[in-house]
Length: 393
Image (cartoon, rainbow, N blue to C red; front, side):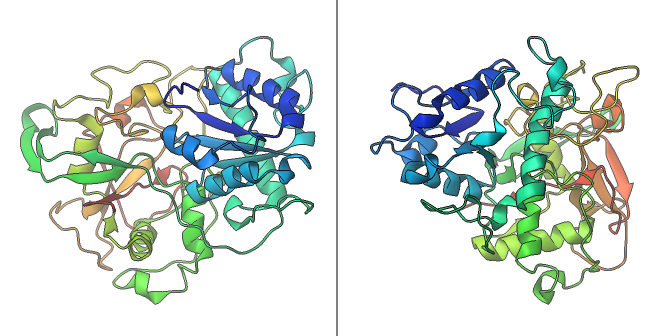
């Protein structure tokens, strides 16, 4: 079979569930989501190589598993779900949760029954995340799930440690433009790698579940708070309500798990990854139009008015194809605001840097050179972070 790349969704199901899978695919494709699903050979066939297909597909944003009693009989279905758990991008949908036309039950989205034709951007986002929310609320966090075996009740809970699967983007060494206007300068940076997306709720939860707040190794020279809840705890939204100290502790823990040094980006690293080498105002260019990013626009009924899932604006990636570097959440940087060369952790509470803008501020705040000063103990519903490393193994 000839594969197209990349895909947004990798869908797996059993032969008996074909009609339901087809309905789900039509709903996704009506909103321009690309879906890989083998509708000729079926995923239930013994020869289906799930792992090989996922490697070929170059990291789909989401793996959807349609669970039914028939699906549990196939190793290929369970294998795809295990991959989704490891990657942190799994949605598990039980077959009884997919209803024939109208495509989805009104309990998923209050406005879905009113849809006629293609839904709007905001309706689709709300619907998609409502599905994830319902599953998480009813089943608990995906990272704590075992893959059900044949003749077992689906989604049996167990405590298992899964590590976040970080999608690294290579930022090459060389010169770039820093700042704006008369204060713009040429800087040079060594090669580094940055996470394609902000750290998500699901990824940060692995740190909490692993006892990250109880292990003093991660908190040396930091002020340790008690963990708090995310404002929007859907697995694929950026983790908010995390202060600078918590973000640094997460990086230390993740470094120990992976075996190489991971940290917050300096703002110089952040800015180069966001704007490339030509000093552009936004990651994609010089101007902003409605639909470019999750920001607040005056008198716009399409404002989401909340954090949205990562990866919803792939057409507005940076020159290096780093996603979500404008709007959605402010992102912590490693250095101090007044002394950019000071990157070492301390307990002085000296202000650190935030970059990238957020969902409740205007597009001008999401320009690539805008910097904000906040005390490192700040927690807020519009602040998150992403990570960098020198060379991922």
